[in-house]
Image (tube, rainbow, N blue to C red; front, side):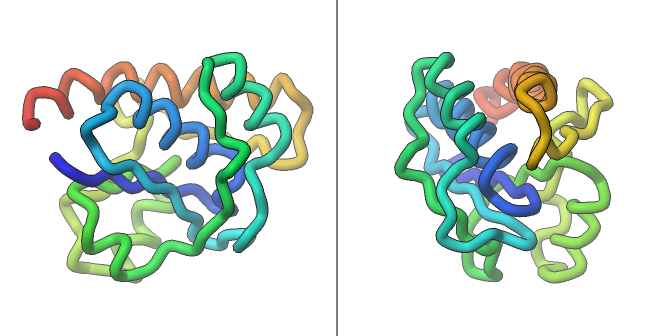
Length: 144
C-alpha cells in the first residue's frame, strides 16, 4: 500500500487529525486528506492543532483541499468518517468502489464532526479516530 486519503466534510478537523495520526504510524505511506465540502485554503481548526500537538504532531501547515477525481483514483484506500460520506464518494467516483472504508468500521463507530463544538467534542472525535486507526493499522501492515 502506497497511498491513503482521509476524507471528512470541511477538511479542517477530523481528516487532518486522522491523516496525521496515520502518517505518524505509517511513515512509508503517502497520506493526504481532503474534504467533500472543503473550506478550501483554511488551516486546521485551532483545537485540532492543539490536540495533535499533544500527540507530538504538528499540523499547523495544513490547508484544506477539496477531494478530486485524481486524488481519489490515486489512493489505494480512502477513509471516510461515516457511511453517508462513503456513499457520496462512491457516487462521485464509482471507480473507487471497494477502496472506500469508514475509519470506524471495526469499532462500529462514526466519527462525529466537532466543528464549532467545544473541546470535549474534539477530544471525543479524536478518541473515535484513534480507536478506529488502531484497528486498521494491523490490517494495513499485513498488505504492505
